[in-house]
Length: 313
Length: 278
Ligand SMILES: Nc1ncnc2c1ncn2[C@@H]1O[C@H](COP(=O)(O)OP(=O)(O)OP(=O)(O)O)[C@@H](O)[C@H]1O
Ligand SMILES: [Mg+2]
Image (cartoon, rainbow over all chains, first blue to last red; front, side, top):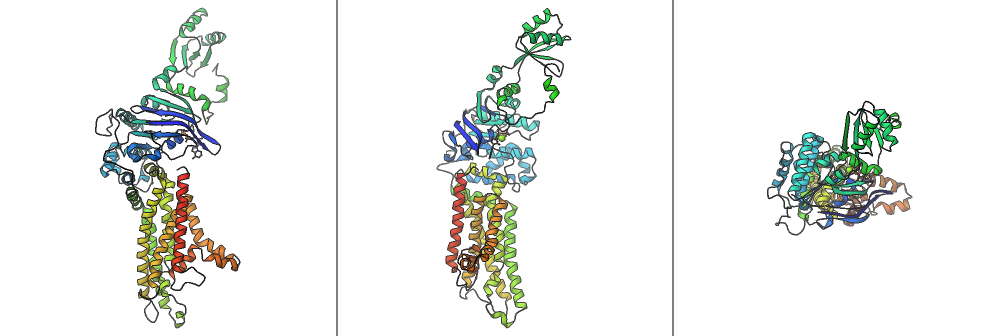
C-alpha cells in the first residue's frame, strides 16, 4: 500500500508535483500515467524517500520510507534504467545491495534467473544492452521479495518479447497480492497491464480511475462516415451543428449527432453511404483528451496547411 | 515465458516480512556492502596500485640517487627517514582520488539511489564508507610506508648515513606517514560527500594540497607564516620529518588537527546528504 497525501515538490520556481493525493492498493497493477515532464519520476522518488517533498507526505505500508526497518524486504524499485556502476558485474551489484538488508546470497542467483541474466551475470554492466540493463534493474527491485514494487517506465528499451515479459511479470506480482505501481507515458501499454490508473498532468492529479471506467467515460465518441458525396454531407452536418474532421483515409469523423441522425440526414440530401460506424475512442485518445491542457512540451509537428484545412483536407 | 514465477508460495497473499528478521538493517550489513563495492570496481585496484608503486618506487629512487652522489657535505641537514618516505607525497594524490571516488562514483553512475533506497538513513552509509575506505587506506599506506622506509635505509649504505627504526622519531615518522595518508583520504571522502562530482571534488582536493600553499606563500610573510602550519600538506611535512620546523605543529598535534579536518568534512557531508535530494 502506498498513500500519497498532498505531495508537492518544487525545483526552484518550477512546481514539479502539486498537491498530489493518490492511493496504490495491493493486489492490482496501478498505472501511473502522464505526459513527459508531468512529475511521475519525481513522485516515485518521493515515495522512495530519495527526494523530500516540500509539502505533504507519502507512506509505504503506513510508514514514511525513512522509517522502514528493512527497506528492501518491503519495497523494491526500478527507478531509472542504468543507474548502476558500469564497471561492476550484475552479480556484484545485486550482492552489494543484498548485503545491506541481510538478503541471502542465493536470492541474488534467484533473481538473476528470474530476469534471465544468469549467463551474463559476471560481465561488466557497462557492456549490457539497454534491455539487459532494464532487466538488471528489475532484478534489483525483486531482490528482497518485497510486497510493494515501483517501476518507472520499465519497458523502455525492451523488444516486444521483453515488453510482454514485463507485462506478465507485473500482473503476476499483483496476483500474488503485491502492490504494483508502474509509470508510463503510453496509455496503450497501460491498457494491457493496469487495472487502475493514476493520471497526472503538470504535476497535478487528473484522475484516479479503473482502466475500464476510463474507457467508458471517455467523451470521445464519434461516428465514421464514408460516402462518395462526402462534401455535401459534411456541409449539411456542419449546418446542423456537428463537428467534423476529414481523415487522411478519406473518411469523415463526426461528433455530435449519432449514427441514426447522420443516416437520416444522408437520406434527405440524398447521398449514398459506404460506411456509417460508431467509434469509441481508444484509450490513447481518452488519455490525450484528459491531459490535453496539461502537456508540458508540445511538439509542433502538424504542417500549417493541414491545420488550416482540418475541415476540408 | 507466459507465467513469471517470482516467489514460491500461495498467490493472493502479500508476502510478509520474513519472521527471521528483527530489529533494523544494521551497520554490519552496510560495511559488508561497502567492502563489496570497493573490491568490485577497477578504480580501486588502479589507485591503490599507483599508491604502492609511487610510494615505494620513488622512495627507492630518491635514496639510491642520494647514495650514488654521496659527498660528505650531503650530511648537513640530511634526513634519511624523510628521503625514503618521499613517495608518500605522491601517494597522497592517488589515495585522495580513491577517497573521492568511493562517494562520487555513486553519484556519477546513479548507484546512490539504489544505495539510499536500501539504507535510507544516509549518515550511516557515509560512516560505513569511511570505515571501509579508512581501513583499506590505512593498511595499504602503512605497508607502503614501512616497505619504503626499510628499502630506502638499506639503499643508503655507508658512507651514506641512514637511520634504524629504533632511531629517535623514526618509527613515529614511518607510522605517521601511513596515518597521514589515511586521514587525508578520509578528508577527500568528506569533500566528495559535499561536492558530489568526481572532477569537482578531485579539483578541490588537489587545490587544497597544492594551490593553497602557493597562495599562502604569496601572502605577506607576517600573515603567511601563521597560516602555513594549518595547511594539510604542511602538517604532512611535519609528520614525516624527524625534526619538524619550529613554526610547524608538532607531529601528533598536527595529526589531530588533520583528523579534525577530515571529521569536519565528513560531518558537513553527512548533513548535506540528509538535506539534499539524492
Ligand atoms: N532534479 C531536478 N531538478 C530540477 N528540475 C527537475 C528535477 N527533476 C525533475 N525536474 C522537473 O520536474 C518536472 C517533472 O519531471 P519528472 O521527471 O518527474 O517527469 P516525468 O513525468 O517522469 O517525465 P518523463 O515521462 O519524461 O519521464 C519536469 O519539468 C522536470 O524538468
Ligand atoms: Mg520520468
